[in-house]
Amino acid sequence: MRTFLSRSKNPGCKTRADDKNAGHAGGVPRARQDAQASIARLPARVQVKDRNGVWELRVDGIFRGDYLKKEHAVAAVALANWTLR
Image 1: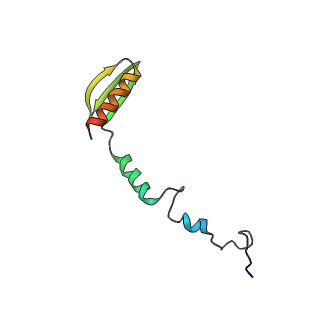
Image 2: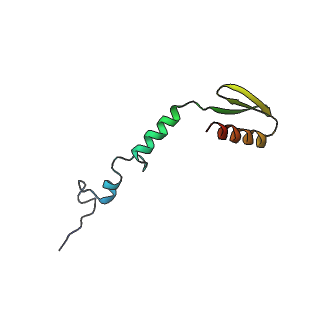
Image 3: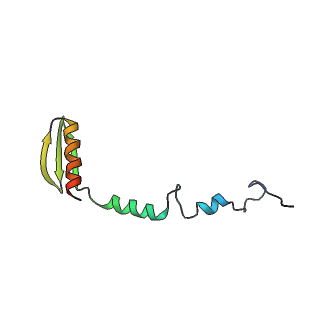
């Protein structure tokens, strides 16, 4: 006959959930954390910023255009990202 103890009765007891999440921070695998950290360190090649209603697009720090509508700027960002592949 097996006896199952709750965590409150045996604080040193490990569960399967503990083993499953070993090496994870917040449920994210270490490999993904490392990849996200390396991406975060890379400078953004395509940058867009709003300056008083005018959207400025830069690619690798080089000015590429001003847009009066956000939708047009977003389309230009998508096109710039696609061409950098």
